[in-house]
Image (cartoon, rainbow, N blue to C red; front, side, top):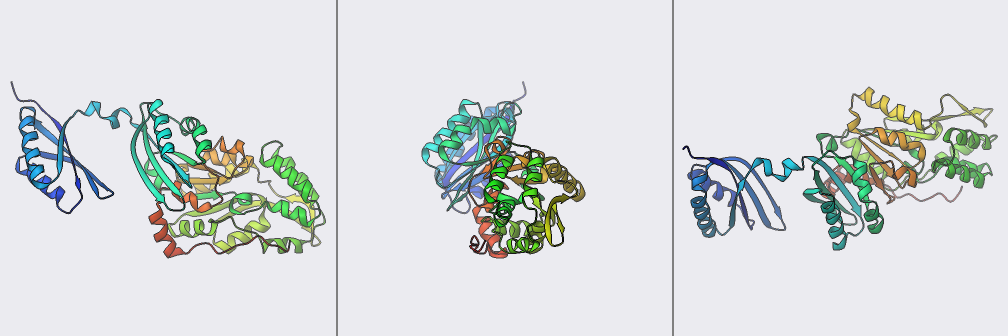
Length: 413
């Protein structure tokens, strides 16, 4: 009977130093074994090295184990040999993979315990954990695998209570090449790129601030139809001098991290668009000031130097935002999986659903329930962690592109 052969997995652990892999391979090659794969990483100075061997004569495994143990002791590292059956490997059984990214100020040990238990209870295998940052913000990536295909919504639903308990922001994305190869970002303006609702500030200048804010809140929460709410609010602005628009446009506060986000993404070659249910008058100025590629919003009608109370052209509502996102992706020849969308209101839900990564930013509950990711910290720079960029990467990129300028809410409005 001919000898049987199989794959063997050699695992080596040691205090890291130069030459351990070379020493192990010297032993393996000199004994005539075939190396088919190698993985290694160092964590806090400790080396974890895995070497996969093929065509190993089963009758020689015991002698290999003894020889390798003796050699490892001589070279001051620990080595273990495992039979490696392809059909029993966890990465084969749990082949449907996603990445769960967590952002929080503090992540205690109980948080680690609870999220790993949630995964275990759902038969979700943790393939890998990476810490992207541990400074002012803790950013963690869990690569998870399931036996059957799963959606981002299913994973997010399982983490709802955990998210609330530990005040963490979460993104769930399919683990594919496109997760780290986004090319287009489409952002809402009001309460996303900007730290205000522009129409509410116009309402204050027109003397109808309270009524304006009430209608805006209802529209953004999905309590009333966006289109009718917009037309109603625009009518409240009738007679407002165009000088008031200029005054406001010179003092709009950006959300913290907005300028850093734009500078880094531009440097990385992204196309950046603002798609707003607000007004083109302000969007044009923002795009010109920060070098954004596209800007779409509603057009206020101006007659004799005053707001007429009417709009011109197509209304940019939820359906229009969705169509603009699709059009931009097609125009730039990007897959939708390469698109990021960010927004806070009910009129952003369709846009977020179409993007490869839809992020609810400080959003209303109805929006967070429909998004693959959410951020409830007031800093747009955190989006970069969801793109797989680490704190070390951010530091290096920040040195090249610069950061945000200090901004304060204007006091003269």
